[in-house]
Image 1 (cartoon, one colour):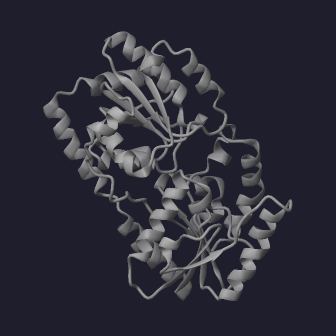
Image 2 (image 1 turned 180 degrees about the vertical axis):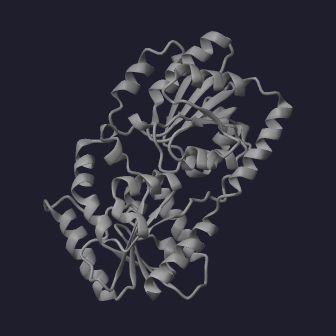
Image 3 (image 1 turned 120 degrees about the vertical axis):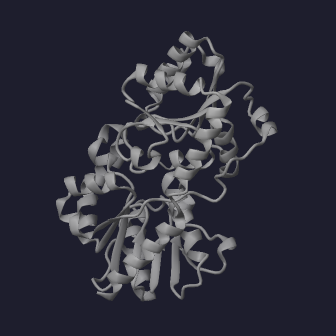
Amino acid sequence: MKIAILADALDNQNAGVHVYTKSLIQELLKRNDGHEYILVRQKKDNALSHVQQIVIPNTSLPIGFASLRLFFIIPYILRKQGVDAVFEPAHFGPFNLPKKVKRITFIHDLTPIIFPEYHRWHSQMLQKIFLKRILKNAHLIFTNSNNTSKDLEQYYPFTKDKNKTLLLGKGSRFIPSQNTDLILDYGITLPYFLSVGTIEPRKNLVNLLKAYAVFMKETKTPYMLIIAGGLGWKTEGFEKEWATHPYRKYILILGYVKEEELPILYSHANAFMYLSLYEGFGLPVLEALACGTDVICSNTSSLPEVGGTVAHYCNPQSINDIKQQMIKVSQFSLNQQKINSQKNIEQARLFSWEKHVNSFLDTIQVLISE
């Protein structure tokens, strides 16, 4: 098979879709399976010299070039390459390809459609304008959870017979990792709750801040709250809550954290907090579990698929519910923490990029053979 991957997310993102695209490509390139892969992207990576990279820089000048690149330049080059299939991991495309070329897209979540208020206006509009057409033209649609697949079929019933769930995996670096010096370098001097992810409304960090305040007031136990993630969009509510927080001196906002340091942050945390109002999958939950860390997360959307029976679930809209789970986890004995850690690691072992890519390739092979 000759498969093109539209890999812009490697160059213009550092959050979930970037992690997914990078992990998928790494796993594909580990194999000597006789398939040919072409990466279409904005910048060349010299570390990937063993795979063909077609670099088409993106620029806002002249006005409209980004659209020209997406709708005409990339399709033209792919037709010249004679590919069997084109895969879009960020679900915005592929566009303008002949019918003999199989179009494959990946839906990570439907939040711009289901919860447009959590997104910027232009993101909402783009999804409303293009997503239905993209899904209709796709020969195959991958989703990252059964919940996302269910949502997809609810909002776009015509996708029922051409979507397949591929659960995500975890990076090999996510294992229990100790480095006290790094923790101290960050300024972390107390036990802590950890949050990882872009600061934006869907992540529900305002409720996390409120629950943390109640936890600190009721328990009078000195815990820090560490938030690792860059500022996203519609952050006014979060910034206001943080600015007036009664325990602000115990809250540390790290911004974007290097990937190689994340396992250490997870491993030293007393609990990882993921109170998202909606998730397509919830990759940080899996990463934290793989590091042996207890997870407190929402009982909504796809998160129970990831956390299984080991995560500690709460209603993300209930401050009291969140606080109660924080108290419960903070009171675990050392022996209970060890037992939990092993169970968490065992749950994380159910997910792997190897399984993901095996199913990815098998499904595409069947599609191309039809």
